[in-house]
Image (tube, rainbow, N blue to C red; front, side, top):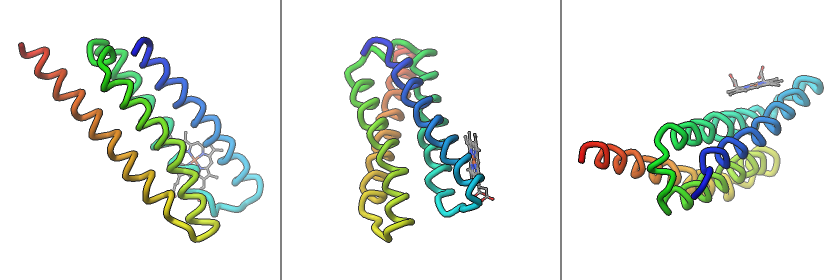
Length: 125
Ligand code: HEM
């Protein structure tokens, strides 16, 4: 997938805007009930997706694979759904989406692990 690094960074930055906005709102209202949503927007969203993007930038050969596209879809969808799921768990005591999206999120990490192993093999050959 072309420019997969930029797609990852773009989505990461969108989630950072959401996370930072939520942080400001929480601070202004002095209501910290949604701290876990804020933390996951910023860490599972911004920090992790940005690191994936920068890795694809550093090693463009793994960005050209079809696994890279599926990795972006899985990690991207999971990073959006996970904070929503955590919010539903906190506010409505309904954890189903948080559970499902956390498994999807882990699947994205496993795809990234496969990419890194592939990279090692390509570079060793
Ligand atoms: C405009 C930017 C930000 C604002 C206004 C903000 C605001 C806040 C607030 C009000 C809390 C709750 C503190 C408390 O419970 O006493 C918090 C917690 C937290 N924030 Fe942010 N934050 C911002 C950016 C970030 C970023 C960029 C990250 C990570 C990359 C981050 C990660 C966290 C984490 C992990 C917690 C939970 C800490 C804990 O429970 O001990 N925040 N933030």
